[in-house]
Image 1 (cartoon, rainbow, N blue to C red):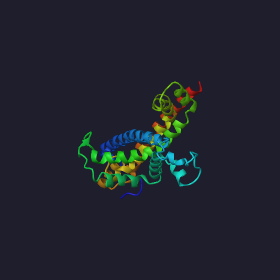
Image 2: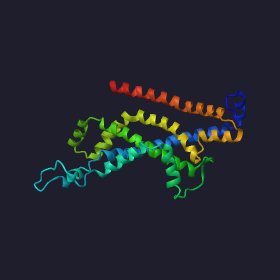
Image 3: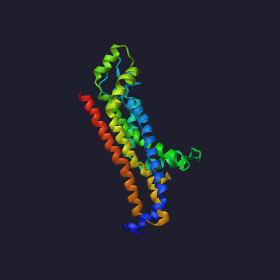
Image 4: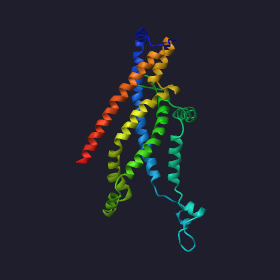
Length: 261
């Protein structure tokens, strides 16, 4: 196996250009589906974390109707199960490696679920692609949750009061007033998450997803060349991430310029 970069090795990997093209398409699709799944999951988690559902609220009052300040019953009265579940999910997913999560989803969850073995676009194995998307989407949702929650909480509370004075319900207020403004504020962060997922999706080749790193592995197995395919993969990732990040920065500047008018 070659240990140094040799220019004569690049023509040897040229016949495998289609593998890199297919890997690039898979990587982009992984990122797109992951961000969509992650955003929907994160929105649910953010609303759960901001909810005020306390089923044991009545236990916070003593026999005279006065609120308890200390003790187990006072603590139990403030317990919010939805917030607890969402917080636990976010903390666990953010505190464990993505590779471990991918393996748990693929070898644990989807080992008991029989997926159809068809191929998307003629070369993407659905039974490998879907577990990768689910694992990355669950991980992305944990990070996007905090972004969405901060975006919602950044909206002036006076707008909520104005909506209530107009007779709007909490759901209508969130749907028509709060969320549109919050999404506008966090849109650059969501787009940046897309760039992050493009890079993190490389981990899915470990479960057989035919992404860019899978193409590198295939070329290495066929030609015993490793450095040059890695350089090609690096160039592809750069061509995907760098222009995207610059476009995001441009859009962010345009949006902030509109807010200053």
